[in-house]
Length: 115
Image 1 (cartoon, rainbow, N blue to C red):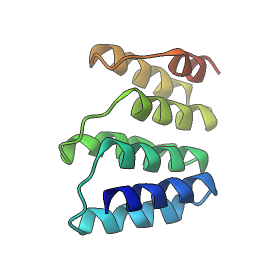
Image 2: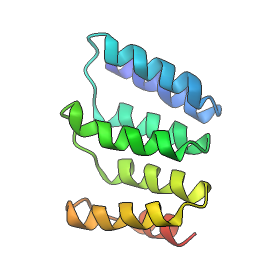
Image 3: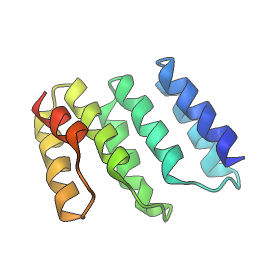
């Protein structure tokens, strides 16, 4: 079930359907589907592609509530969401948070922050 839902969230995000991606994500949270980093990353990316940085940031924060650990992709997707909306302050804060939480940053992280 986790793989199917993850693919659905990802497919919605890739087709600019961030609203649909969040609907699928919401169904998952109400069902007995095990949440994992991949699902959160797909949902955060979908929000970013839809210029919904506030929702992307909410999902990044919610990861911990579900006992799921964020990773470099989680943070990069949220930073990119902020970058798309011109919210460079939030992007810089996330980048700084990555280094404090010992989440590995990479070229994608740096490029998103300086864009």
